[in-house]
Image 1 (tube, one colour):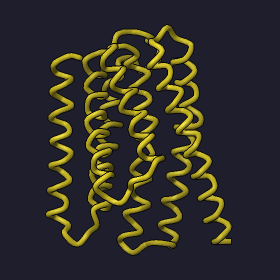
Image 2 (tube, helix red, strand yellow):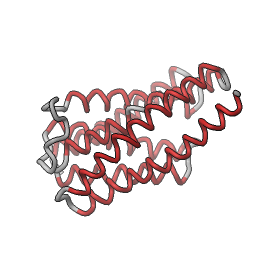
Image 3 (tube, helix red, strand yellow):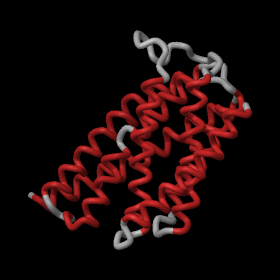
Image 4 (cartoon, one colour):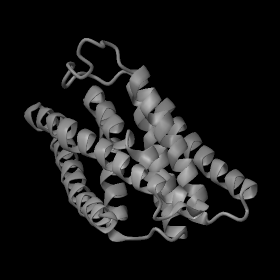
Length: 221
């Protein structure tokens, strides 16, 4: 792994942790989870922005299948890897410890780590970062609104529906296309396995989200 990538990961973990500590100081009456979700929202916004900025050819953003990752793409992956390491540790100190979340983090960490080590398929992996993070602000907004006193309100329902719509589009329409490209290309087996694993995790969450939206709409009917 390149030295600048390792440095980015280390600095990133320290930065995300520092941001969390600062937010805990700024909002002492808010929960551990509330402050962690603010950090997660910051990362999602930064990751999506960096992913957009790393695109070299807008006529075909992920056409360079199997090519060597560019420095910009490596930076995007390193920033997200640092966040995932921070968040995995943070979740185990907070109240969000569950098998689903842990598996999601581990699959993502191993997948991104493999991409950084092999320095291949940067465009596909950055696209994966984009589709996995584009719905995250809405995901966290749902929970932030609940703590702010907007549970079971039309505003919270709107956030739920917006999250479900963005998640479904990104993970179940765009995601399978990228997964197919990854499995069809001449990539190391580990990268293919992680790509398939991430898509299976996305499908699992899609069905859980679909049930949640159906339940909430039925309740409001």
